[in-house]
Image 1 (spheres, rainbow, N blue to C red):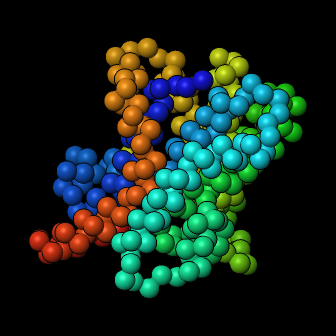
Image 2 (image 1 turned 60 degrees about the vertical axis):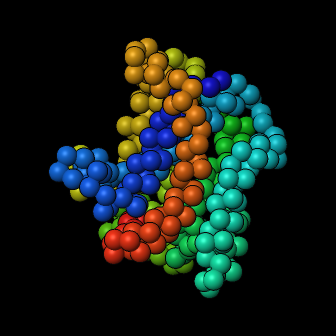
Length: 291
């Protein structure tokens, strides 16, 4: 089952994240009229995680049991070739620069987010795939041993409780009320466990969909707080039937959504190239924001 309207939203999220990271000096995006859109555009990663959870239920929710190895193999076949290509291109760009072999290995294995001060090593955007791999590892267990055996009520209570708990724990770490012995607090926004709530909210949204049918408050938006907002969006967009959603289902927009993965994971390469060109011809310094 495919929901074409949602495929295009992946493109919108990917482009907004790229602009957030690399478009600070581009007047088209950062001006008095549009900057508010992109200043918090890193929440697009959270949208990716919620969407991932939603799509997994749509794709596999009819099954009571899935093979872990087959599932992982299928997921890797879909995402790893593009991810590996991005790494190879980065190696080519950095051909004459010193490369940290440990960082490279972590990125190749997609486990960099589990290590302190390594989440943004080598390919900066790769940390999110490290998180996704954690989701992929947990999903067969959730589907086989929880979703297929628990009632919708118990599933809802569990996921909502975990969502609230994860937000509270994150704030306790952020306010230094709690401390992690082997992991830097500044890297906590990239830790896979801190994003599990987003994937689970996506799962829960998918279950309800499949079977039942610039505010700045000083809050942290990047680690799942907006998952509860993304969830109804995932439900109502496919259910709506208007000119906008019909347009988003067209082949052009679906194609843009399909290539969002390529855009996102090769964005570092385009930035390095554009930074070189801007400095060479215009003497400008592009600053990257990965906060």
